[in-house]
Image (cartoon, rainbow, N blue to C red; front, side):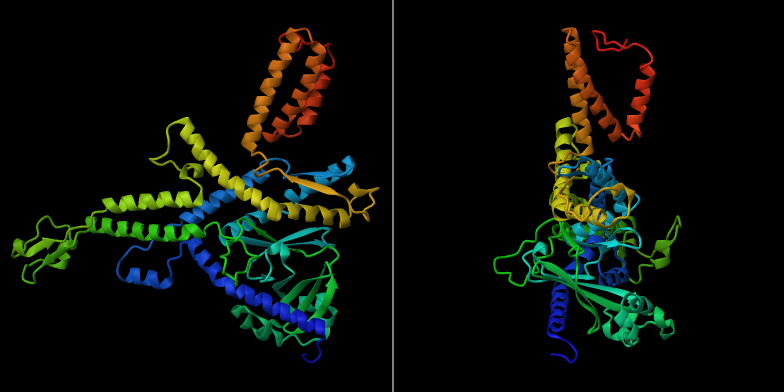
Length: 527
């Protein structure tokens, strides 16, 4: 045991080392995914191509697909007024309050739209996304922090991220902030901790004149003991706090879209991370970029042909680059044009590669809003392509819901109900646990905005026809009952179409109509 450390602290340092080593095993895979996402050819390859006068244009097909999926997912989540529906068992009033609070966080209070976008991108690129969610007493609200995979290291032996028993959070703070946040740090000499603790080369070379503004690496180790989460804060090997119980559980949340495929004899896999959406597309994109740049080189040779000439032919280099109408040479027979490459086959190759990219990604170009020569002209063909793209997006959304969004919204509501200072909770016994049910209005099992609008249109049309039948049969009371339902469906559709204050507008209309007698005629009209 190291001097000055107890048994628990020794174990915590061991957990820190194990988690960081686990991340170090997979970081090279994450870097390869980054290169594929950015279509990065590599500095050595680019230098070689540039030196030989070859094309080196990186066609970022994967990045375009990811951005399209991002937009579709964000539209699905935020196109409606309510990201989710909250129900509190046995308390309609509190359900309405919590629904309001969720709406606040989905809008300006937490900028949830801005926060979720990089989370979704990371989940698609790396297969895993991470965030930290905790309550800020000073700001009287929930703080949602997207985190980098390089900052959060997870139990490498867990079956999945739900099974993780310990996690490590690495971040940087100024010396002044560390002293202000931790009493023990006020007596510590932190100036030597800059170079010894930092994994960031930039921070190792900070100017000494920064003094208390210099940043040092702080590590927090979260571990599960007897069903409870505890946190310890460390600078280097010095403990600022040890095993402080977290009353609200672990604030770090992992989300994956696709479960990782682990081979039967792959014993060293870090199973807490998910499988990347873009990984299968990277080799195809790489070959596409190579073929595409070869086409550019071939076109350049066709536009700028090369010639073979003997030394005594009389043809000079500056003659080929000039715009002279007449060039004199000693012998035409000693000059030959090199045949330019035929790019017809390569065009076929790139088209096939493009089709493979669409197939592997599960997102046809039509679903991306890109028209192609293979785009079907029939309504059936168009519908099938749209359905294919929508299925891919819906699958991703549903997986996100189960792995991240459901837990995120539940935690937001839990912390808000427990800590927020607000008159909205007047009369509520917040010491008592409430049973919440949060239903996400997106994904498989939840309809998209277009589908919901279509279903509402069908329901409104069906109700209108039924009301007319009742009126034709003299069943006015039954018609009125159906009109009430029709009224609610009309309000719901108006809200989805972005009509504001629809309830108030309809009340004003009723007040105006209420000043004169109203009856329903046989055609369903108002007299």
